[in-house]
Figure 1: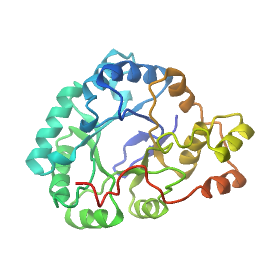
Figure 2: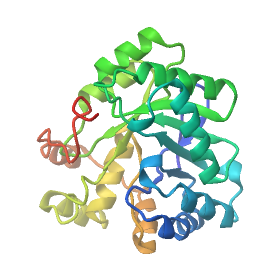
Figure 3: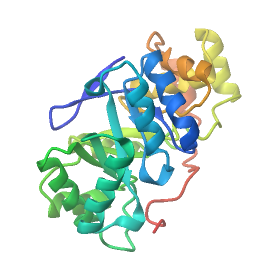
Figure 4: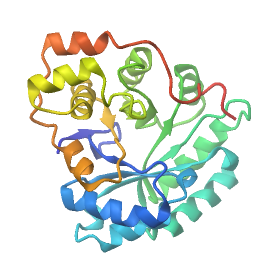
Length: 271
């Protein structure tokens, strides 16, 4: 497992487990399997309604708490300084933890025009140590421009939809120029990578699956990546990617998939 250094000096495992749309009843077993397999990074959110299960899986595991990087996020209906502090307290209680490694604004929700106020609450949480690092999710560069101008702490990362059909070159370049790591959600394009002819062909040359090729592509770009699965075999398979070295021909073929297509909403459109 490789780790990357964030702009606050802390380390984040580059490959983690995303738990979006994993039912709370399944989350504990899924997290426990992932930790046993070698994952040390779990990404959840208040929206996912599985923070209780994630916390239970972490508590059941033999892996020490301080060895696991836990991320959660504040949802759009809790924007605002005081609302965000209360939402964080609720997430921490559900997780059964006294701190999280990373707390994110899930979406900027620009029509509310409260994400700067919300981020100031994150700054307070970092200052008191209950959120060791803070960042954002689904922020366009123009959202980040405002945040950097009106707040004090540069986000450690920006988690965005990112996959071969939406490689987000502009966002990645902006993030890198400002010392912000880029993290990919929907890294397999909600399953679109599975069965893709181009990716299957590259996988065949490397003796790997299409999903493993895409995860290796993310790692080669320097992205943090959080593929989701509830299947133990797939969870372990998604971790077996660090021996993949993609050559220029592979990278060119993957680059040709770029169609600027989202599987989710544009951040400017989601309230």
